[in-house]
Amino acid sequence: MGRKIIIDPVTRLEGHGKITLVTDDQGEVQEAYFHVTQLRGFEKFCEGRPFSEMPNLMARICGICPVSHLIASAKACDALLAVRIPHVARRLRQVMNLAQVVQSHALSFFYLSSPDLLLGMDSDPSQRNLFGVMQANPELGRGGVRLRRFGQQIIELLGGKRVHPGWVVPGGVNEPLSAEKRDRILKMIPEALATTQHAIAWFKQNLETYRREIRTFANFPTLFMGLVAPDDRLGFYEGDLRFTDARGKIVADKLDPSRYAEFIGELVEPYTYMKFPYYKPMGYPDGIYRVGPLARLNIVNRCGSELADQEFAEFRQLERGAVLSSFHYHYARLIEMLFAVEKIELFLNEPDILSPHVRASASLNELEGVGVAEAPRGTLIHHYRVNEEGLMTFANLIIATGHNNLAMNRGILQAAKHFVRGTKLTDGMLNRVEAVIRCFDPCLSCSTHAIGQMPLVVRLVAPDGTQLDEMRRN
Amino acid sequence: MARTLILACGNPLRGDDAVGWHIAAALQDNPSWPDIEVETAHQLGPEMAERISQVGIVIFVDASVTHEPGSIRFERVSPSRSASGAFTHELNPAALLALAEALYGRSPARAFALNVGAKSLELNEDLTESVRASIPEAVHTILGYLARQVSLPKPATRTATA
Picture 1 (cartoon, rainbow over the protein chains, first blue to last red):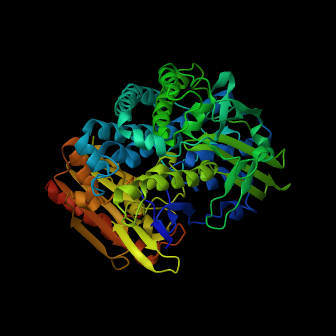
Picture 2: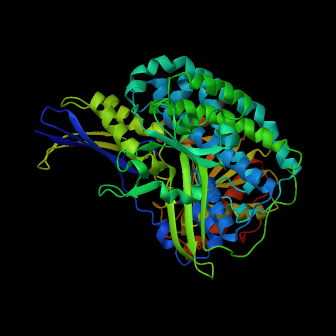
Picture 3: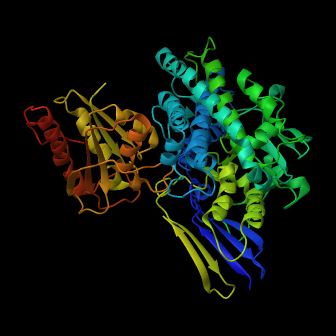
């Protein structure tokens, strides 16, 4: 008899989701669905509000990556104003965005995923947390906490607060950087660099342990997409969009981000609130692509900073074409943290970084604007239309996690086919299915209050609705 | 660096959940106590463990949905790993104290939680009347406790404003 296995909620993610696995009569997993069970509605309830409110309003989408929404939204508003923002304002926005990359990646790697990586996928679930990491490798645990704090402190120093800073505004930023703040940030750089390098070394040493996961965690061919800065470098803040294929070949290049609708389609499936973007020329679902750390390192020729470039060269040796295994999102995340710390230092040492000219002023000049930036989890698109009074009439947001939706669903199916077998469920089995999603570090909502307090419930349900088995962990 | 840390958390956009922030503001406005560091946050996170490990007294201030609206509970908190569950980036006071011990080898000798019963957590920036009225007493409770720790006179006023 075929049956359904439901993992609800999936733990150690940003937001609330659940997984349904459908098996056939022999107990083999045939289908997998990742459901995002919350409806946010930001695109709708912003209608009628002044566009100038958007950066602050849209930042409320997320408590982990508000800076990304702030920046993409401000860039869309820059387009509505039709201004070119001052060079230093662009640099300061970049510093804040990179600081967010560090704090968000640190959270993903050290808090959410390192328990699996350090303690093992089959270890006691009650130990698979930061306390368990602390016991097994105190230096790694302490370093992770310090690194996240490093990113948070920079955001707080620049924006006045750790979460939802209002400092990034249409036209630039609303306050120049002071010498005192710059020096405080620069003083923290050496420790952040050392911590990141230590984590990379530890991860590389242990890669062999995860051979099975590397082979089975969403390692299929897809396209990869992201912003590429001039000279083929990582472009977190600016650049054009590029698609590459699984062999590492460029499929489409120098795509104007503001014309995203020409090459990205969006499809809605009935079982989830998250849309399914796809590369239009290849159709749905063949136009599956991935974004985020793994994709970014697959589409560029170098990072653009000394130490990160050394690690990048080694990373790209993992496979002959693009690095396909989504397990390596973790590896890519660590390299990006190194890049971010180095770039923050470089930017803050630029001679004009304390310039008071940080905001361009203009009134509404365009009725449509698109802002694109790389969020920690991938490419983030904000698209606005306004009326002559500057009131919002339309908003479309494509969030990083959405781009990865097709790949996450396919990755869950792949891992479930490999690890979930027979009639008896084990925690390690299901943890691996969840761990595939954690590789992508999806951000499903801005609600962070309940995570960690919710039980994991797995139910085996027969096609007639009869519950056959249940596992619960608190 | 101050030896006493007041850590108030809550969401200032969710009605009475912001009461900790109001109490924090009232404490910051109170000039009678020189050795307090007051911090506000949306929630407690592992990054706070280091600062907590450096102080002698920590008082966590928060709203509570399990207590009568406007009522005040002031209770000692002990480090507890079991309180952490499968936490990710959000902790309760007992787990945060345990994490400070695990990460930095110590937690404050005196740790307390001051909880104010909340009535409404709806989306707005106002406190309900009973919760707002409890702020002077909450401030008095904290300052009174701190005064006793160093044998200072109790605070003379109960009219601190948010």
